[in-house]
Image (cartoon, rainbow, N blue to C red; front, side):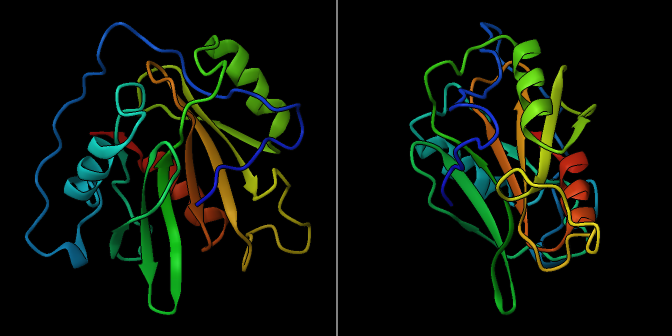
Length: 196
């Protein structure tokens, strides 16, 4: 996956503020042995995510995050290439990279103030939401890839590539979350994000 260049504003360094305090999270329970049917609430592919994160250039500024709900799409996870960062993609039968998450490589300005980042994402993306289950403030701007709104004749985004830029308090990188399974699926993924 390639990191998209912001299309509404001049090239921006969209990322969360770096904190001197390490991110602390409550350990999630271990999932059952079968990764094929992980119940909602359990982290998806935590070992793979930690492994990919541990090899990334940006690992000290871009903590690993995982989904805790696949939106009913299954959990066939694999490592994905992401320049300067890390990524985990989920394949479905006949659909490579159906959805996934990535911590992007760092850009100049990625340590900017979170209020400025919120304003940037609100201006860039047609949809915006706060993410209350992540360190605060955390938020996402999202829509159709290219920072476009879902068409009036296809508000669910069927057959379109949905993308979100996610900022997490205490993290310096910009996270990307994507889904080829529609707007509702992307929104389900966003609210299920948790720190590892």
